[in-house]
Image (tube, rainbow, N blue to C red; front, side, top):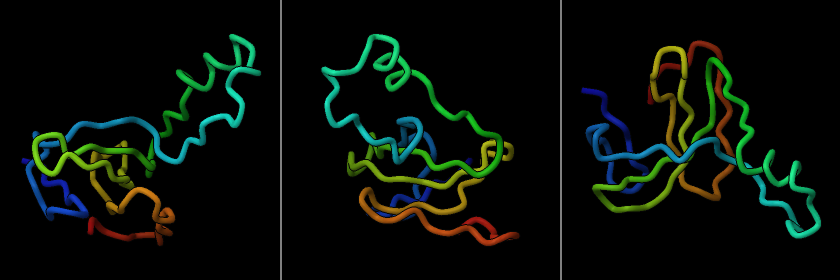
Length: 98
């Protein structure tokens, strides 16, 4: 079973968590001024990168808090987790799962 490290609770089984999609997406300052196309792009268009990717996660069956994670989408390995509001950590080449 894959273990995910919640920054609040520590390592827990993956079945306790829910992915919330791409992290660090800023909400438009004035959404009412966006066209329908621009609003749809904000809501639905995401990077979908292969490799290390920043995502939002929720510890749904634990503390119920949101946090961010760097995850390698090719291997499904979690590189690092960090609290919402913290700066995205730098990733050095060859860094293993933390």
